Amino acid sequence: MATIRKLRGRWQAQVRRRGMKPRCRSFDTKLEAEKWARDLEAQVDRFGAAPDTKILESTTLGQLLERYQREISPAKRGSVQEIQRIDVLRRHDLAYRTLIGLSQQDIASFRDERLQSVAPSTAVRELAILSHVIEVAIRDWGLPLAKNVVKLVRRPVIRNERSRRLTGDEEQRLLDGCDGGQIPYFKTLLILAIETGMRRGEILGLRWSDISHNRRVITLALTKNGSGREVPLSQRAFNALMDWKSRAPVDQSTIFPMTPGALEQAWRRLLLRAGITGLRFHDLRHEGVSRLFERGLNVIEVSSISGHKEMRMLKRYTHLAADDLVARLG
Image 1 (cartoon, one colour):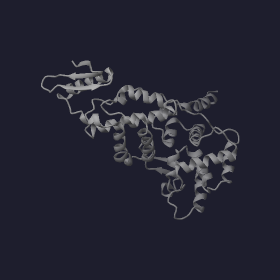
Image 2 (cartoon, rainbow, N blue to C red):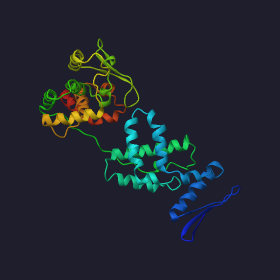
Image 3 (cartoon, helix red, strand yellow):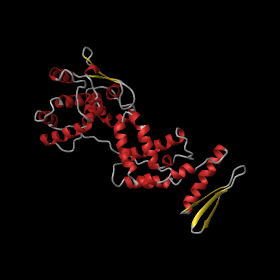
Image 4 (cartoon, rainbow, N blue to C red):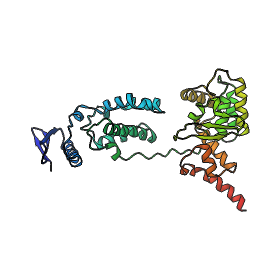
C-alpha cells in the first residue's frame, strides 16, 4: 500500500514493494500523488517490477502528437485531415501536460471544453486521435504507461443524421445553376452524385479507367470503409459521363480534377446562384440512396451500391420501403 503524506506544502507519494527499491515522488495535489502511486503499483503487479518512469516525467503529450504526426499520419489515407486535426490538438493546453500527470479527468475536461465550440463528431475524432497516439506510444514506442486514459472517458453521442432531400424544382435549379459557373464538369458531377449516392471522396477520386463502358459499371478499388465495390450506372449517369468525356482534355487523368476544398467553394457558389438554402453536398448521397429504395431495390441491393457496411446505417431509409408495402398490401 502506498504512503501519501503532506511534506513542506507538497504531497509526497511513496511506494514500497518487496524486491524493489522504494519509489518516491512529490506532487502539487493529493489527487496527483494518489494517481501516480496507483499507476505504479498497477505496473508492479502487472510486470513484476517498477518501470523507469523518468521518461514520462519529461515527455509531454504535445511531443507524442508531434512524433505521431511525423511518423504515423503520413501513411494514412486521410493523412491531410488528420495532420490538420493534430495541429489543433498541439495548440491546446492539454498538449503541455506531461505523461506522468495526464489523467482521465484531464481528458474529460478537454472533451467538455471542446464541445462548447465544436460539433460532437469533431470531438469524437479528436479523442480517437489522442487514444491512438497513446496506444502507439505504449505498444510501439515502449513508453511505460500503465493504461490508456483516453479509453476511460465517455465519448460524446453523435446525432448528425440528416433527412434533407431535394424538393420541388431544386434539382433542376441546381443543374441550371451549373451553366453559370466556371467548372465545365460540375453538372456531370452532380448528376453522378444524385444517381449513384457515391461519397464525395469516391467521386473526386474517379478515373476514366474505373468505368467499364460495356458493363456500365464503376469499379471502386478502395473506399471509406476499407473495401472495394462496384457501382452500376443508370442510363442518365452514364450518358452524362460520356458527354463530359467527349469534351474533357485528353491528358486529364481524373474525371473531376478538383480538391475537396474547391468542391465546397463551388457548391456554396452554386447554392447562391440557384437560391437554395439548407442543402449540403452530402445530402445528395442521401437523395441518391433514397431514390434507389424508391426504385424498388431491397436493403441488400442498396447497400452493395451505396457502400454502407452496416445495415443499421440504412435504417432511416426503411420508411420508404414501408410506404411501398402499403400499396402492395392493398
